[in-house]
Image (cartoon, rainbow, N blue to C red; front, side, top):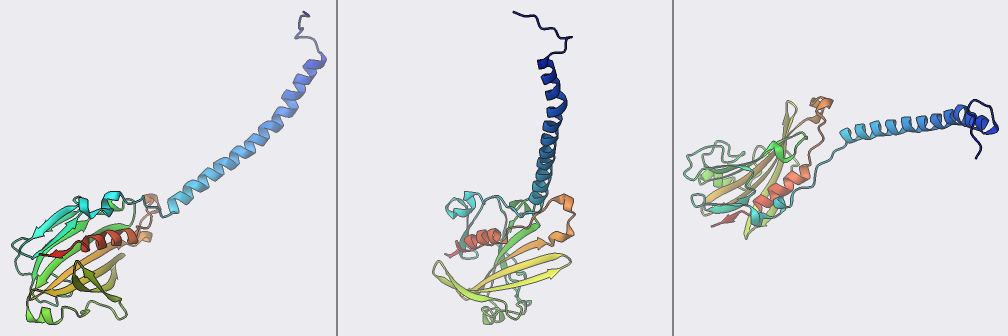
Length: 239
């Protein structure tokens, strides 16, 4: 076998030199351009992801009331189910208050339950919390105006009816805003056993534009929060 002489110019040494000094720079340039494009695409994708509203799918637990906490309130004459990780405040021996309904107009009543969906339910969003209040009043004025929209309703606010476990409810929707905060309220009201009952939930969110971009927040899923609240209200039953 012939011995390779590395210090001697041959036809194959010229070929190797051609590959190294001519072809490689073009290959390097080609891959350099494409690598730069890949980096730019990755940056754009990351920026787009930061500006895109995305909420992880709701866990199955929140769609299955049969697995929820049960509250049987004999003083209020009702029972209701709700997710156990929501914050509940009970009043089994309640004192008179005007906070039993947003449209109580100063009429005294009782507040049986305050249920809060915490901010953690919609992480990395402008969702603040959602609160459900259950109360009733037996005053003459409260009963008279029980199914009226009330002074808190705005002209054109939607109204409807819904039958929940055999009981018809009048349903009112109204909104409010102030100082970068937005409030969306749904009020269920009915008369039962000589009392005006009120089931009202309010969804509180903040103006997302008020937060620095570095917070990387996205718009909360209003439909998801409303759906969970409607499921909770749908479990309300008079005893």
